[in-house]
Structure formats: structure tokens, C-alpha cells
Length: 310
Image (cartoon, rainbow, N blue to C red; front, top):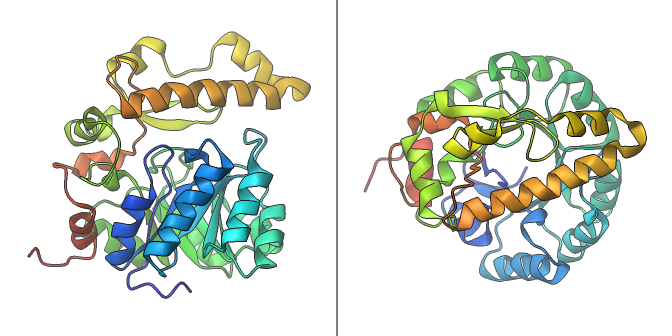
């Protein structure tokens, strides 16, 4: 579909993914995407896309948050269309407008899904592929294991299925493809890379902590989020407080509550990702169990495809 050598997407990770990492991935034969949300202004987003397109003609994508927590969606979508990226990954909402707009310009749309019901909805809307987010994904996880979700989607949908979550090693990649997945969306191992721009403390945490240290918090984005159980995360807890729960139950106020929680959480995570602070909220998946050192991006990819080390 994309003309890449290996069926792998370097997953779009909030704050983490950027054109430098993506370019390394493209040159190693995979594709990648970065979140539009990583850029505060339209000019910054357009520059990031434009700079990457100047360095390579290989296909890459942009991740768009399509729910009410993202007031910049229309502006971001326009940038994607104007600059003609190869594909868009939609998350957390109804992708109808994105699919229609992108398809009018020949841009493919892959949609994050966590269950069959939503997968069938986006298939009817015209999505080009499903990104099956399982319960081992970093960031916003699904609720099902890949061994359940992938066969279910393959049996009931006609679209390609890209599995997201839990793949760090070559053996895990093979096992997931053997389940029927057409491709893999992989994020967590790329945090612990030399090219990744996040603080060294974040990278070291990905190496030092294990699967048992990953917890789900509702306090950062308004949706369940996989993070490392740092002392700060333990201190603040992982459950929404009473006021947040009440607001989320009120239909009128719910979207505003989500925006407030999202914006507040994003600021906390941004500070933790790039500077020294005790308020460490680091997003990652349980696949950190298999990450033991910081490597170049191309070595991570070589390990996934079982390429002999030079």
C-alpha cells in the first residue's frame, strides 16, 4: 500500500516523535508518523512536514486527534492536505471529516480502533486500514489482547489490520504477523534511541523499569493512558478525582472537562519529557520489559526485522 520494505509504522507518540526519528526510520525501510499535536502553531507543523519532505520522497504520515479535545483539528487537517502527506492516522473520535477530506486529495487514512464495533464503523466511512490498538499499547491502550483483537477484525472486516501494542522483539513481531496482522505500529522501543529528543531521564526510565511498572492513569488526558509508575505518579494517584468524575458525567460540561484535563495533563507530560523535574509522567507501554539499552533507531529496526548486527 505504501511501497515500504517492511510492514512497520514508527508509531506517532505525543511529544516523542519528530521528523529526525521518522527520517531514520524511512531510510531503514519502514514508515512513520508524528502527531500534529506536537506542534503549537500551524507554521511549526507546516515547517516540520515541509522539511521532512525536502529530505526524502518516502511516505510518512501525520496523526490527528479527531475529538473535541483538539480545537486545532481543522487547521491541522488543512496543513496535511496542503502538503500532501502520504497518510493520516486518526485517534480518539469520529474520522468522517478527515476521511472525506483526505480522500479528495489522494491521502490514505488509517484509523485507531479498539474493538469490532468501531472498526466496522470506520470501514463504512471509507478508512483505508485499521490500527488495532491492543491492551499492551503505550499511550492510550485498548482493552483486548492482540491474540483476540486481530483475528476478530480479520474475520469481520475487509481492511488491512495494523497491530499496535506489545511488539519490541523480532519474535513478537513474527508472532503478531502470524495472528493475521498485515502490519505493525511500534512506538515504545523508539523512545530509548539516540535520535529521540526527550530527556535522558525519560530514556533511562524506559530501560530501567519493567512491565510491572506500567500503570493506567485517567488523570492526564481524560482517557486511560499507560504511563510508568514513577514516585510522582504514585503520589498523585491514577484515578480521576471527584470533581473530574462529576464533570465527565455531565453531558454539557463533559467536552470542556476533557479539554481542561487534557491540556493540564499535556503540560505536565511535556515538562517531564524535556526537563529535570520530580513531576515525572512518562508515557510507555509494557514492552519496556524487553528494552535494555539506548540504541540508534536503525538498530531498533534491525532487531525487529532480525537483521544481523554490523
